[in-house]
Length: 129
Image 1 (spheres, rainbow, N blue to C red):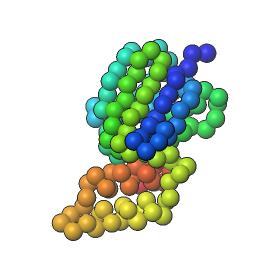
Image 2: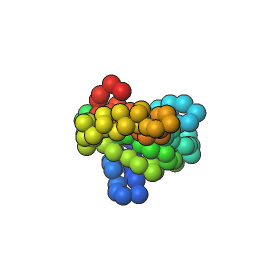
Image 3: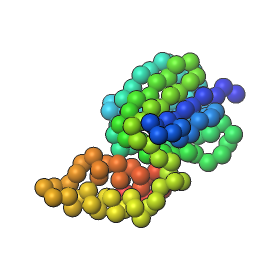
Image 4: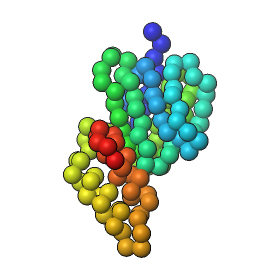
């Protein structure tokens, strides 16, 4: 079975890497599902979105919040380079909820970037946001 070699990195660390059956990413042009054999692509990630990775070993889907960034597909390699990234399993839900409340109550109106990122953190953690 063909697989993808996937790397999700932020400036601070390698967030996830491994073999995958499929990757789903939200771009500024729409959602993109990536399977082995996909045509080469260079895209821009939607700031405050969620990337989903289906591991090749049959494990549970990996979800991660991503800030702005890029991804590339070349051969069967997918590189996701995000300004900010956090695995859903690592999200502190209470802190993300607090960040969302603070963004929504920001003086002068909602802080759109902080709101998108807080909502993405909650979605990555499996919470409705």
